[in-house]
Image 1 (cartoon, rainbow, N blue to C red):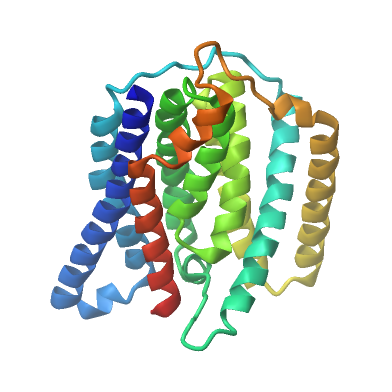
Image 2 (cartoon, rainbow, N blue to C red; image 1 turned 135 degrees about the vertical axis):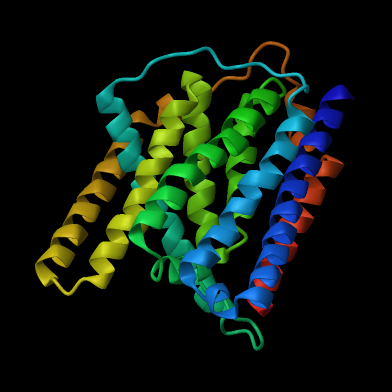
Length: 299
């Protein structure tokens, strides 16, 4: 079945992305430790080494492996500023719900002897220069990740089943973070971004949404948590609560707008899930990301 071969190739490509990124980051950090041990302990350097090798070395591999696979771009459609803001509030509500689930799971895992579930990314970001956070987390990461987990992925999985493609995009985006604290909210907002892309055909919408979400989660929350101004803390809490409530209401009122229909020529319902989620290459991606997750819990 050609569709199964395409999905397998995609799964292998994304598994290689994880492997190449981890290997490259490890080798670079080992080199830095050997020539400048103090620099290797610097949080700014750790953030750069932890992110840029994947973008520089692994992303081109994925692109080259999947670029010639059959694809179908969504039909371009504009959305209003009001609807864009509504989607942002829905993302924030989903992010809060997912983060809460991650916190609960993390605490449960910490009850297991020998297991240490830590939000390493959050801990690292707390020590990094804000300008570097904006450059890497708010600007570069959303651009690369949206091309990876929305455009490249959905253009090629969408013709098989647009509905299943949304779930796959969220699942792969969640597993990509290899962190129990980030999995659930990445899964939720990954599906939201996937729905927006398939409904509009414009990757710039999801990139900008991704930037806004990361800005709120990394820059604004960092500023509030490190500050001693109680008024700012309370104001931010009220603002975030208002965003969440608005997001919940917006989702209830507009949930049908996030739905997509499979196009003519999509695989039949009885085989599309198996073709997409159980392709051998996808198992390779599942295994690699789960191994990285397990290693993070044991180290």
